[in-house]
Length: 291
Image (tube, rainbow, N blue to C red):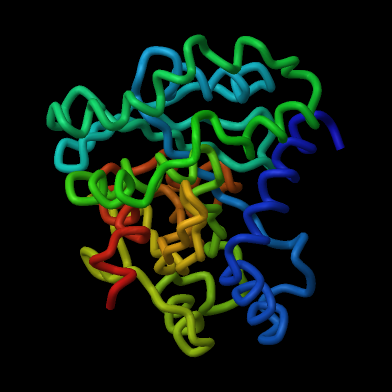
């Protein structure tokens, strides 16, 4: 594996340790004959959450992936959730797209901003600038390390009242928020996300139903669904422990562009859809995890 593949492998290894649903999905897919092994799964994209302060956020984290050949693409704005985001195209087709979102801290209340800055101000310079980006072990360690002190549960809960994205990120930092299985090349009817969702539910997976279990772009060519994040037993400052939302698994069906049905994979719908992503974010929200 090259350096980028080693970094991605490290992300996925730790993500699977924290998200039991990943192995549940893979085991079910193998048992039902959708795939013969895990390596056959196409990873459509992986996603990160960040906090928009000068020394961090998108402008910092993206440096890692741009250095390794990713290309910055479209911008997305989420007014209701107070987020910005971009997606990044991979340097090789077999690699996943990357989606990085960022909390618009200045759009929050003065109280929430002060609370967030009490943590993020501990990071005085962009930490990515100090990394040797061609050292995959160093990058991997950075992506799984705390950037600021361990939050108190009181601060986590206070942030969650205003922004569950903010509370998730203040605790989880750069831990992988989700990876996404491409379903359009699966065998038979399973290449249709509606049937694939039924398959998941048959195997006991709980799906995010915000905006419907299938989130569909206006052009009808990008369809997405996601599990509801499992709860993890989180340790806060003072060794206080509470269950909070961890990460989740997403599924995407990219349909062929009109008039390109006989052409190769490059003719599938690209990019993302803000309305879809807006509902996918809620996989970690209490409105889904408390059902």
